[in-house]
Image 1 (cartoon, one colour):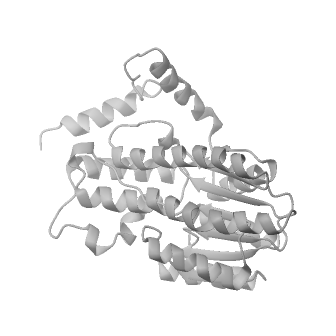
Image 2: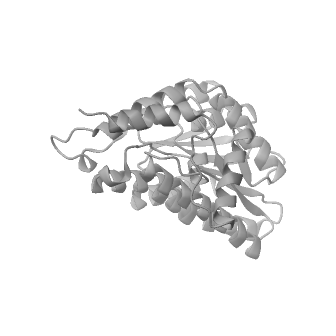
Length: 304
């Protein structure tokens, strides 16, 4: 946990929008040094300008977190400018939907590259730097937060690639928490599991690299339906990204591992775990809102 954020350094990926930007704004108010990483240059430039104007020391770097070499270069730049970071927020993420057998190899490569390997590279690059800092300074406190999703604890239909990536992030985060506890009392970890919150994730295709796009390919019916449902759910979310960002800082200060934007959604997780414990077939995920399940089923079964 970190009890005093002033003059500490935060590394935030996906810092150009959403949770990353809102956490950076809180960091600026708390007097932190900010390392902003994002794949979208214009959003990164805008965020850097805003936070510098707020008085924060800023290092802004365009980074594709799916690329090991770029995250490694980020680590070197952070070390050179600010030294080892205290807070690392592995937050960059993309969304994708559709029936699981309709996702292309490129879909899998892109989503797992950002959502999963982005976290892997952040953990791999920054944890050793933080452990070294803890070894040389008994007062050093560090914390790593990985952004997963409620989709890392549940398995909603028609979004299998995303579910798989976020389940992996929960697993990595829980393991990181346990592994750190074995070797140090100065650094810990948390996992952020937001539900539907208005951010830019439903428009992730804007930053999809050309190499992960099949020329001439069109979205399938299930992918278009998934996109429409995601747009609607995300845009109508009642909890703001700024509120979730505050929950992140509160959790870091309290040493809390699981961070939820919508604690009431945990009932569905309990049902899933009961299914597993009782070897019961998976419960209908729309049992609480059957009209949504009927709408999705009708749309998918409609004759084109």
